[in-house]
Image (cartoon, rainbow over all chains, first blue to last red; front, side, top):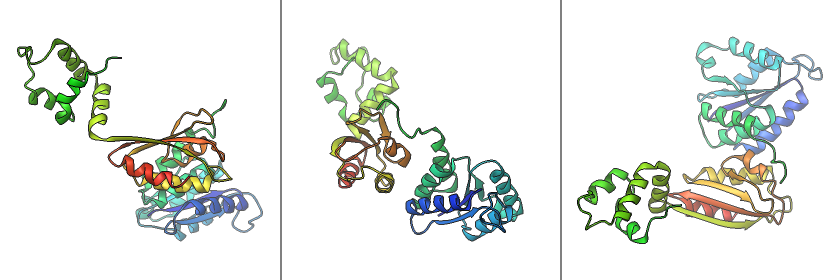
Length: 136
Length: 148
């Protein structure tokens, strides 16, 4: 079973996405969040050290999938990965999935015990699924 | 659309899983035209040359197709949390399982995908057609029916 990390500029958004994902996942899926700046959770921003701690917190032998919102969240996550030991870095994956939909899908599939790559593929498929079909 | 005659179907029920088996087991050669009618020969070639058709034939013989129409009873409709249970149950089966919202005239979606289930936009009272094909299709439909 893999672990999930939710990264957002906003601590409140990360918390909200975390709650959504936790609803979808089984008990065995570890989910952690890294939202806002390290020293001031109210300020918007991302912090590589905070993301690193979040990855360590949910570390699983099967790997960890990191879901981010936009922009510097991706860069901070990359930096966090660089700080990881080599053998852990190889089992850590940054997802291209949209944060909310991706977290929901990833949590569900992680709960089914799917491997890291399969969970990421399912989450990234959210990019091509419209919310609803017009004209219905 | 070309449809196989009932007589042709009967002959091939035992060997429909492999198109080459069909050829060898039936000892089908053009010389034995007294054994096989020309129409059967044309049909045989047609199936041999179209993999789609072959797939349909296999489906027809080796696995089962089941479908059912259910009405959404949940006052909240098919929402994220109930959809999660549907996707989870559906994922436990090998069968390909699809759903469409008859009340909205929707397209067909994969029931193993939570986001596609949400596309159905199913409210209370909507009719959904669930369809499954594969070895455990009947069990899948039975399990999913109980969720609505």
